[in-house]
Image 1 (tube, rainbow, N blue to C red):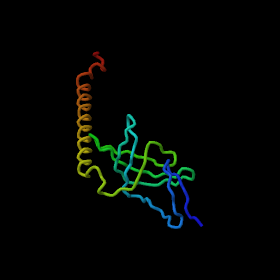
Image 2 (cartoon, helix red, strand yellow):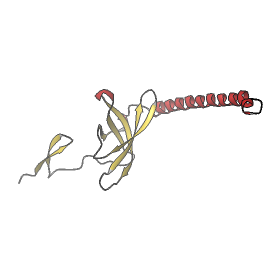
Image 3 (spheres, rainbow, N blue to C red):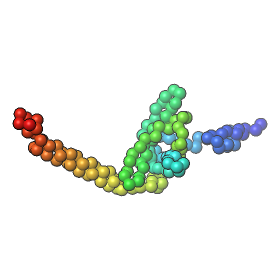
Amino acid sequence: MENKQIIEINGVKLEVDLTNARVIENYRVGDVVKVLRKEYNNQWKSHSGTIVGFDAFENRPTIIIAYVDDGYNADIHFLYYNADTENAEICPANSNDLAFSKESVIEKMNRDIAKKKAEIDEIEQKRNFFVEHFSRCFGENC
């Protein structure tokens, strides 16, 4: 008796020997994964991420993945990966696959924090200037 079956996963046909079949990918919260996302101009970009949760919806069980887009800024994005997800793929990774270091991401985030604080300081200075120099326009002498 032949114990082989052909299955198709996202367009890839595989012949599986059912006598030796085993689960290859088990995911747990905290696992490091690679996220392949379709970007602008049909370009694909790989990102490092980690699984942060699972939503056990009856019709659309979903893996929640936080991944870092390590460009000029280090932005954290979330991918909700389920049967309807398009333009994204995931695969297991290990810590050696990380395309960035913890220190570089924290440094970029600290730089962004300093920039936003400077913007807040500038707005506060403008508000103080307005209160000081325009307050009489709102009084009886205007």
